[in-house]
Amino acid sequence: MALTGLFAVLRWGRGVRGGGALWLLLAVVVVQVVSWVAGYLHHPEWMTDNPQVDRLAKWFLFIGLAWWLGGSTRATLLAWGLGLAGLIVVVSWPDGSLQQWQRGLQGMRVDFDIRNAQHPAMFFGAGLLGLVCFAGRCWRGHDALVWMRRLLWSLALAVCGVGIVVTQTRAVWLAMLVVLPLLPALAWWGAERRLPRRAWLGLAAAALVIVVGSLAFHETVAKRLDAENRIIAQAMEGDWKSIPYSSVGNRLLTWRASLDWIADRPLVGWGEEGRSLVIEHTDWLPDATRDHYGHLHNTFLELLVSYGVLGLAVVLALIAWIGLGTWQAWRAGIMSGDMALFGAGFFVFYAIVSQFESYGTFWTGAYVQNLVAGGLVTHIWRWQVESGQRVFPVFRREA
Image (cartoon, rainbow, N blue to C red; front, top):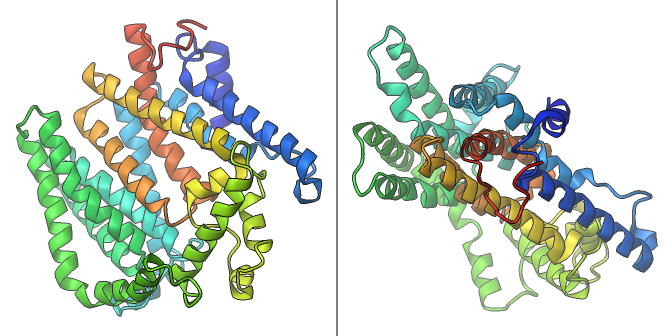
């Protein structure tokens, strides 16, 4: 779908193919080639035989999805809904899923056989944000299916809420604590200092998740949060030598090591294997870290290590293009308020969790990124076609 959609944009996408998305895709390919060439000249023994341009190019698969969605809000909501339904099936249907839920409710950390617990936790968090933002659509109406929608919404909210707890991922807990209170503030501001009646349903859902989660899983959450507090305090005091090699301890040590590598090649980085080089060739890192960690658990540090400031600049430009385009499409009435709210909430959520896990370098992060971005970008393109404007006016008007 992604490749055929990209071809379709290039062939028939008059009015959108000259916009920011395709130019930034070209830029990210060029940056990766430049980084590979510079690395091959500087440290050929650590470079791959050919530049692996798919490392960042896969973040642009949303282009194909956006094309096939055709600017349709209904199609976008269907695609997002199918993504959430697929998650629920994956954590409920396979053999052993019920046992994992039972262990999780008993206080054990579970991962549902999706890489590790951090990845399904991120899925659950994104799903819960969507359910909160689109609560009004699921609950309003008087048709024959309204009670079915309400029941499915309630079940999905329960699955995502409990899933966030049993996967015991502190970064996701932190992100939810930031985003859930932020959503009503954004909704209130976007509605010109008043909230429509349907928005209160989403706010009630957010409050329900926080209250029920706090009461039902207080001991599990408290135990997980207290486990690494002492290590964080040691790092803040500069006591690096005595930091134990725990989850947080190893992250702090590898992050500190990455700063030295970034400082050595800040512009173009060390190539696509940069994150592994930091761990394998930093002498003072302990053997336990080398044996059990192959990446830095931080998307932005990995970008800087691998592709330098050039790579990070292109990714930040992409984020800015989607963010500004979402704003403009919403202001023009092309994108609904709840969809724009979800886009903003997901951006903050994903930015926080990406500080503690390199989601973008795994299929899980690429999948969620492209699914959400595809739905937003299809509306941005619709706004561009109908208005004749560009998100970034520096790009060509027609192509």
